[in-house]
Length: 355
Image (cartoon, rainbow, N blue to C red; front, side, top):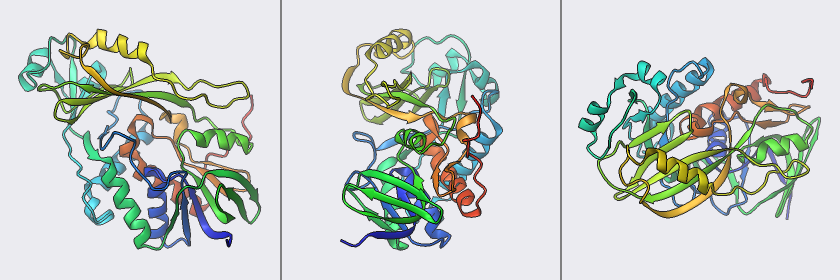
């Protein structure tokens, strides 16, 4: 079997990897190969509809993040010209459980909330409604991006687990479980694994990983289509009649001796505490049947993680992190990664950091 030779190798066929491929191909930047350990790109198991959370303009959010969010929203709103396929984007808005954000997005008191959504219970404090957030079909997004990859001449190889990257002055030698080859540039778009691979390559960075628990609950009623707790990094949204998705961050991903990331574990205690706290305001939350429970790692989105990180020779790149805003930010962050890689202006080389 002949070695794979390309200008650009992308590792990870999730939304970010597929968007990076699309940006490269639309710029006619050279040959593009995308590899993934799965045989075909797919949305997370059990999920089709996913939330597009727009980070509200609180003091904790950076101007840079706001700019990326606006650009991401522009790309979604112009989807027909970008992907030539409708991913089912619905800008339904989100109830934001944060008093500081409420003052900027428009405050709602408990009486107004119950008038809008009769399924809510008694609420105290002031909440806000952010009209920019929405819901999109994640599987349609990946399907559209894969279609464009093939349309514009990119190649996808599934079932290829990365085993070796060796950077050289003129490119990167790579070995997977099935193939080997040589690439001019490599883009690490495989989520929480990317920071640890960059660390193995000797690159220091400020990107962190957290654990996210996802629960499918049997819950119905007249509820907001999206509820987000920014401080708790919690999100509740409807996926189908009689069912909701509850996503809860359970803090930093646990590290094993040697610095490797431990397998993500479901935070049952965190779920119990959340249900007990919010049951009176979302009636039936505590008694709702748990249909599915799963845990995964994701990179944290904060001001330190918004840099594109590059290797010593500038041949291997890790995109900025999107965290809970992944579904909205990935087209914009992928665009930034490609523009910086092609121009040679990546700003995330952190090998010279002290400490």
